[in-house]
Length: 343
Image (tube, one colour):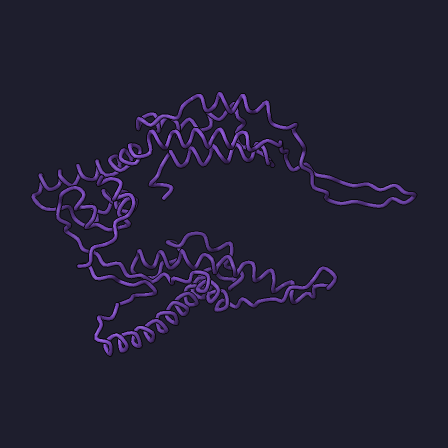
């Protein structure tokens, strides 16, 4: 969504974050004076789309800076030592600074953002839509004119991937309809991602050997085996969280990803095995096992649902993974963006 919405979302979100970190600390990548330069790329892009940000925003922010409270250093006590005779030494480390008065900056940014949205939001979204579709539509028409047939699948994917993913949720048919062409490809998406992502990651965590360790209060000493298991659990939790990306890649590729396609894995692999390849095999097998268990349970539920539906004389709903697959003849509910553009 962030990539689709583009520089407008990036600028207004970043502008608010800068104001927050200037006031609440510990530090900000830009001060108020330097914001026009820091956000130059986004501001230029908005200008080119005919949706500029009012430069008076930065003037008001600079004036409001004088109403902020004094700079207060943020410190963290690191250690202290009692030297005896009522003398003690304490070491502190600076952690940045903060200033009260964030609400002054927030209100200014909010007012200008709302004014910008009232004036430009619809035209901005149309411009973003047009810029993403214009080039792939031109290339598609050029291939049709030169060769008299649609481009090959691989070439088509390269030229239209950004537009299809950003604006059509991967629906090639919808993209072709938007440019007035008939889709030469009709891919079918297979859903593997469970609806209960947290439950799935928890099952992967347990399949990898994760063990829940009972928390102790501050007065109970931690024994060494529990401390070691806690450290191991931290690494296994990170791998369990990454299992969701593994499933996303499997959906996209039509097969489980390999180690290279998955990306960085070696820095956490030691928790599973000393050898990276061996650790990867353990990791992939655990995820596949949990997926198969989930699909097996779903197929059992689906069979029961089918029997119940048939007994009632209804058409059972087919499911793949944990997502319903709707009948393509039933019109889809239109999104707010499509309703906006078709007005």
